[in-house]
Figure 1 (cartoon, rainbow, N blue to C red):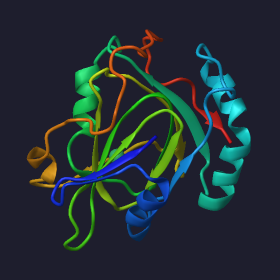
Figure 2 (figure 1 turned 90 degrees about the vertical axis):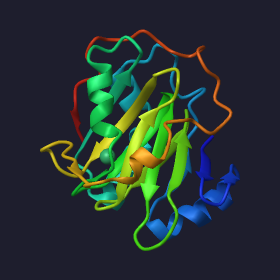
Figure 3 (figure 1 turned 135 degrees about the horizontal axis):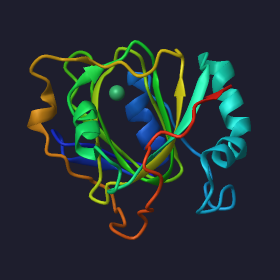
Figure 4 (figure 1 turned 60 degrees about the vertical axis):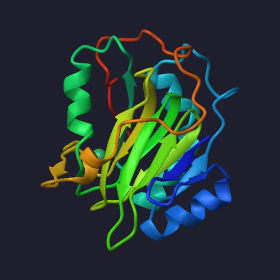
Length: 200
Ligand SMILES: [Fe+2]
């Protein structure tokens, strides 16, 4: 279940309708998809993509996504800190960043246009969110350093960040806000964090 936190106001939201109301003006949508009963704990990337094919097809129609893959990050992922350092600085993309988490979690920090305060969206298993193209944001993992999620792309060229000079990320500590269960759900997975991309 996602938790939305606005540090500047001290607000913490866990109600899905309240979360949607805060995120909608930023063009961000949040959905909950079941994980239990849809995939087993040992499901591989192909099985995960197959299990969520109906939802992926719907998003493809709605958002012009052309490829999907499954990323698998654990504390044992080689080069983890280097990889995370690419995500944890304020940046934008020329395409949407769409993620559906099946295990683990992390925090998407959103820096809205205008004067709105920074918003932290902590996602866990079952949360789908998008970060629209051009939105200033950054991401960090929670303490268990684990996330397994489906990623959708609108371009086949891949993930290209445009970093923001003097980004706000340094003003916000990399903490997770929700009632995360730490330490119990990490899975030692493949050495390559990104499983094979699949054409939709
Ligand atoms: Fe990003």
